[in-house]
Image 1 (cartoon, rainbow, N blue to C red):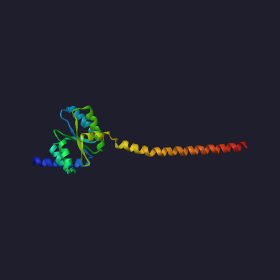
Image 2: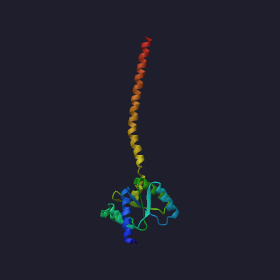
Image 3: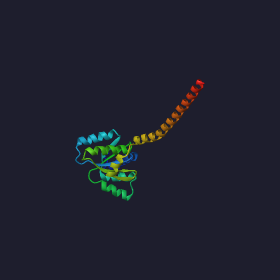
Image 4: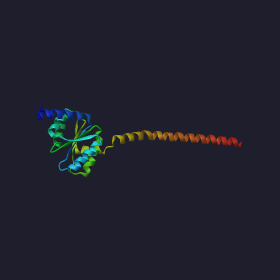
Length: 182
C-alpha cells in the first residue's frame, strides 16, 4: 500500500510529539553553511548526551509545537519569528540544561551554527535565553552545592564538639596530675 504525503506527515507529527513530550525542551538552530563534517561532529557530541538533532520542516514543527502545548498566541508569534530559514531541532531525554550547554559551547567555535531559540515548559526561548540557560549550574553542580551547604554546618558542629571533648580530656588530665602530685 502506498502512503500519501499527508499520511507521512501525520505519522511524523505523532512521532515528534511523543519525543518532545518526553524531552525537557527543544532547541532550534540554524545550520546554513555549516560543513557536513562539523554537522556530523555536532551530532556525535549531542549523541553522548542522549540528544537528537533533526532537520524538520518549520511548518511541520509548528503543528508539533501546538500538539505539545504551545497555545498562547504571543508564544506562537515568537516561534514564528524564530522559524525563518532552515531550522534544525535538538531534543533529548536528559535534562535540557545539559543540551543547551552542549549547543552553546559548540556554537562558540562554529559561527555558521546559529542558535535561534527553543521551547521549554510551553514558553518560547530566544537565542539569548538559551545562552543564559547554558550559564546556569548543572543539576549535579546544584546537588553538590546543596550537599556542601548541608555539610558545612555539620562539620563545624563536629569541630566544636571535638574541641569540647579535647578540653574536657585536658581538664580531667590536669585534675589527675594534680591528685598524683598530692
